[in-house]
Length: 181
Image 1 (tube, rainbow, N blue to C red):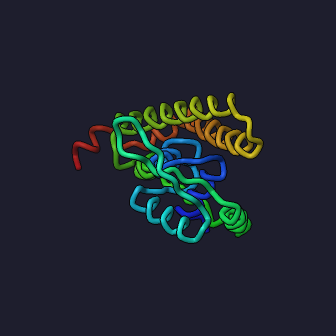
Image 2 (cartoon, rainbow, N blue to C red; image 1 turned 180 degrees about the vertical axis):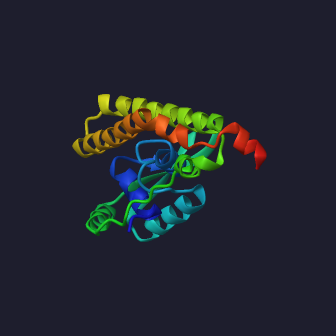
Image 3 (spheres, rainbow, N blue to C red; image 1 turned 90 degrees about the vertical axis):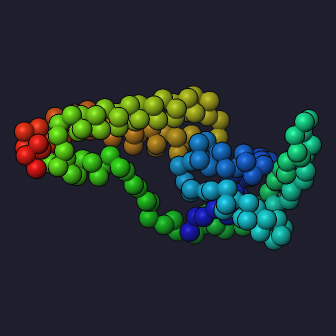
C-alpha cells in the first residue's frame, strides 16, 4: 500500500528536498496525483525514515530565515522504496464533487447544472494545460508515460463531458418544478 512514507521516498529518489518542498510536490506538483500527504503526516514520516536510516537530514542555513532541514534518500531508502513499489497497488480512489452533482441533477435547476458543467470543463482544460507543460519538459521516461496517461484520461473525460452535456442538462429539474418544492 502506498502511503506518506512511500511518497516521501519517491520524491527523495528524484533529489534532495525539505519537508515543505515534499509537501508542495505532493499536493501541487508532479507527485500530487498519487498519495495525499499533509504536513502533519510528512514530518513524522521523515523523522521515522531518518531514524531507520532510509533518509538523511542536514540543516541548511538561509539568509534572514531559520535553517531548514534538507532530506536525501540513502541506498537503504532506495531499496525500501523499490520494495514498496513491488507490492500490488491498491485500487485507485476517485472522488468527484462534480459527479455527485451530476448524479443528483434531477434535484437541481438547469442553471446549477450548467454552472457545474462549465466549472468541470474549465478545471479539466486547466489540468490538461498543466500536464501539457509537464509533458513538454519531460525527460524521465516513467514520468513521461504517467503524464501522457493522465492527459489521455483527462482528454477523454473532457470530450465525454462536451459531447454529453446536453443529456445531463436535460435531467435538471425545470425551474417551475424546483420552485414548487
